[in-house]
Image (cartoon, rainbow, N blue to C red; front, side, top):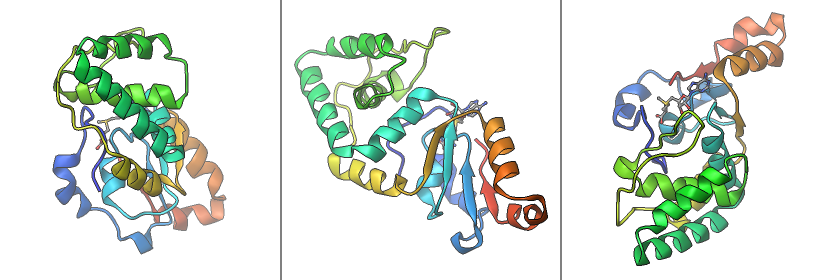
Amino acid sequence: MKPFLRWAGGKQNLIKDLLKYLPPTEQVNRYFEPFLGAGSLFFATDYNKCFLSDINKDLMNCYRAIKKDPKLIAKSLERHNANYQKDEQYYYKVRERFNKYLEEKSLKQAARFIFLIHTSFNDIYRVNLKGKDNVPIGKRKPALPTLEYLNEISKKLKGNHLVKRSYNEILRARIKNEYNNSQKKVIVQQITVTIG
Ligand SMILES: C[S@@+](CC[C@H](N)C(=O)[O-])C[C@H]1O[C@@H](n2cnc3c(N)ncnc32)[C@H](O)[C@@H]1O
């Protein structure tokens, strides 16, 4: 399964090589991906009870929204695209709204985020120092994720933890607290953490 976003530093092109270094599913107790980004490795593996995190709040809101309601996200994307096909300046309206509601953790904001990335210049996500998206318009015919695809992504995300947090908090809190000292040595060998 492939990621639904293009993300700076995404490892999609390296997947074949990276997978060689990962242990088989049955040997992994818990999988941590603390720099989730587009989640290339997560989507390419079958690990269960994954702990997926990233410091980017808009990104994590987007994952949570797809997990919760892929149908609503697909509907919003369709609506955005219909408006965009009528008038390309609509891209800037969505960007303005996205920047206005930066603090909002909502399905609407998640749909704006996906729409903007897929229609922006080079499919990139970039923000200024105030955290506001400043990427100019790019694609006129975006390949937005379909309902079918979002349903699959949602299914894949079920049963996994999604949190907005810095990697050092994750490593400190989860690995330290989840297992007591006597177990730690053994269990840590069964945990897989992917870096970046
Ligand atoms: C190179 S990208 C990861 C790409 C991902 N492996 C993929 O294949 O799509 C690095 C990610 O780390 C996140 N990040 C940067 N600093 C972080 C931190 N201190 N804690 C957690 N995540 C961080 C960024 O938001 C970004 O999404």
